[in-house]
Amino acid sequence: MELYSTKHLSPNVSLQEAVLTGLPPDNGLYVPSTIPELPATFFDHIQDMNFREMALTVGHALLKDDIDKDSLATIVDDAFNFDTPVVHLEDNIHVLELFHGPTLAFKDYGARFMSRLMRYFLRNSDQEINILVATSGDTGGAVGYGFLGIEGIKVTILYPKGKVSEVQEKQLTTIGGNITTIEVDGNFDDCQSLVKAAFLDPVLSKTLHLTSANSINIARLIPQSFYYYQAYAQLKSSGLPLVVSVPSGNFGNLCGGLLAYQMGLPVYQFIASTNVNDVVPAYLKTGIFHPKPSVATISNAMDVGNPSNFPRILAIMNEDESLIKSKISGFAFDDYTTKVKMQEIHERFNYMMCPHTVVAYLGLKAWMESHRMPVTGVLLSTAHPAKFTDIVSPVIGAEVTLPPPLAQAYRKEKIAVSLSNRMEDLKAFLLSG
Image 1 (cartoon, helix red, strand yellow):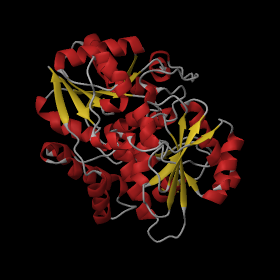
Image 2 (tube, helix red, strand yellow):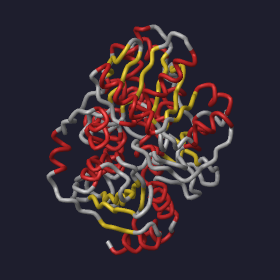
Image 3 (tube, one colour):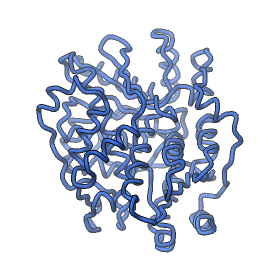
C-alpha cells in the first residue's frame, strides 16, 4: 500500500513507514493513494462469514503488498479474540456492541491490530519504537493494554487531568510495564497538540523514534473499518438501506466507515453524532470548518474542538464536498438531552448505554424522524456503560456492575506523572527517560 500526506508536501511512503512514523513530516495525515474495491461476490456471501473471516478478506485486499496472508491471519485471530454482536433494540434499530474487548471500548479493535502489525514490521529489527498517544478517555487504556509486553515498543499516554471518568483514569494509570501515563494540566486538545508538536520536534523524533497510536495513525483506522462489515452482514437480510450512526469526537471511527464505503460496503447514510462539540455537524450544514476550544461534557471521549481526522474525511471522500454532504449527516446534542434519553432507554428497553452510545442513538432517531423512509438503523456502541458508572448510575437510578477487568483496575494504585501543558516540560520528561 502506498500512502500520501493530506497536505501533499511530503513524499509518498509505504505502509510500514506510515505505521512506524505515524505522521508525515509536513504534519498532514497519511491516506491510501488508492482504495481497492471489493468484488461483488464478497457481499453476496458476507452473511455466511464470521467477523474474523471478513476482517481477513478486507485486510488482505488493503495490505496484500505489505504482509502475507498467513501472517495477517495470525494478527487477525490474535487481535480479535472477542465478540462483535449486533443487538436488536427496537423496531428497525440495532446496536453494534463494540465493547467486548479487554478494555471494554471500541478502541480495542484498532489498538490490538496496530500493536501486532507493528510487531510484524519490527520482527527483523533491533530498533526501539516510542509511542506517544493522547487520549480523551478510552484510547489510552486500549493502547496501553494492546501494547503491554510488546518487545521493542514503549508507550507514553497523555490524558487531560480531571476530564476522564474515574473508571477510565483507573484503567489508564494502572497498566505498568512498558506503559507510562502522564496527567496533563489541560484539555484533550492540549494533549493532542503536545503529541503533534513532539512529532515535529527534530530532537525528539531523531532520539526516540516517535510514532503515534492515536487515530492519526493509519494502522488504527484500517481495523476500525472491519466492524462496519459485521453490521451489514448481520442486518443484510432486512433488505432495507443501512443507516449507521457513529458517536464522533476525533472522527477516526467515522473514517473507518468511510473507508469501508469506498471499498464497496453499501451504507446508505452515515450520521456523525456529536455532543455540543459540533464542529463537523456545523460544517455539514454551512460548508465551513471552524475549530474551536473543546467544551467538557458527560460524553467526554467526544470532547474535541478540532478533530484531527477531518482532513482524512475529505481525502477518503476525494475532496468531494457534495458527496460528503450527501453521505454524511450531522447532529449534536447537549448533556441534558443525553441524560433524559439515557434514562428513557433504560426504562423502555432495560438496556444500559454509555453517554456516547446515547448520543449515537439520538442522532439515528433524529435522522429517521426527518427522513421518514424504511431503513435498517444501527448505532455504534463504543464503550461499556460501566466505564461511566459515575454518570450512568445516577441517571438511570440503578447500579452498574463493574465487569472483572474494571473491578481489577479499581483495586490497583494510580501511577501517573503530572505535567503542565507546555511543550518544553513534555520534551524534558521524554528526554530524561
